[in-house]
Length: 517
Image 1 (cartoon, rainbow, N blue to C red):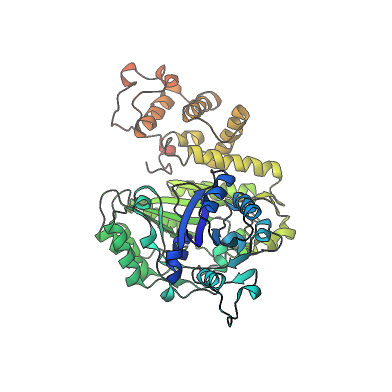
Image 2: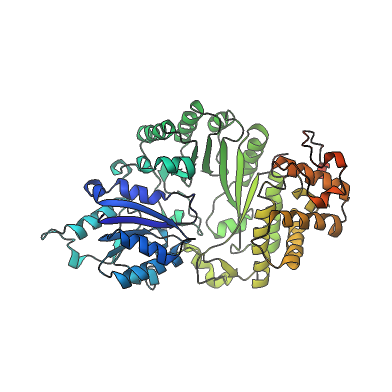
């Protein structure tokens, strides 16, 4: 039986816990006494507690995040009632700030705040084998333990502890650096200064081992992958030289920093190989100044235009609803501007009040009101009342189902086919859809398709035959071989079950759809 169990509740099974593997890699001589046990938030807390208790550990270390704190609190509560002597050690962003008053912190024995890669092992060593002369012997050990920023040169890398099953079936996370030089007030990374990098030779050696084991999808979690251009270029060239069909690399990029050295390498990657997550967040410079976000919008537009016209990069761009100073109209203008730049995905995120972030300094002036429960999303502010925020929350949900799903690449632009504002036209659709079905989740794709067709042909009075043809093209693109019944009366019979390659041009005003027409 292990003395130490490292565990967390992932958002989904497909996510492999990166932090646990870092902790395990840096346990040193305690490694043989430890195991990793992963769960997900869809499992019952009592079942998770049962599995953890069955291993009869002395210490359980848990990673706590915004998505799992509620369920993990139930797990710990059950464990402490059954086996109160087990030491519970927490870590992770959700318990690294504002620890006072958190129910999960009250249940725990110790909380390691900050980057605990080395500190967790130190704590475990003292709890398991206390020495009489140690300044950290158990009776004096504080509940809240602050971890110093670890030197990357001292860290053992975690990549050997991804299993073959992880590599075959789960998202594998990697990082070449930690930290962020920017001070965006809504983001925890703004507290993580300075930026620190893994030694490049050591990192690339670890990446080669993952490639040799058959890993094809790499998700970088670096907050600013393109901050150090020389390092970024070296890493991209490393993967380009080893690229094989089916390989995929995800990077988080600063939107206004893409010099020629990077452009030349990026342009060489084949379709489907690169995805860039680009945090735009707002196009309103006054809002950007309020939240301490520096951004060159002219360069941003130039970089988007380059990526869309001269590369095959898949762009995932982020906008945030509810920032202080952002009106409905200024958000609408930003959304429309982003649509015109043509990213394949636009993630419409709702502002969250993450623990520790300085966004709280705006609470009084902008009357920011947040949900008290995770994920702490904004409920209303001075410029957006609760009813408007609810509309925007539904907008974000429906946009994900329609605009981001890949199921409606050619059909989505028909929603704003009047040539006005994509935002306001999609908001009209969102309001109509919610009035029809009164829900934003658990909507069957077939039902969603039929409702979208109804909106386009009845509410917007678009030509049903043209809409059906475009709709059927989307169906074929996603692999469907038979036309849905509601389309058949508008399509020639010979087209009902024939996949055709022709792709007629959309009307000019629809040709810049964000999915890459």
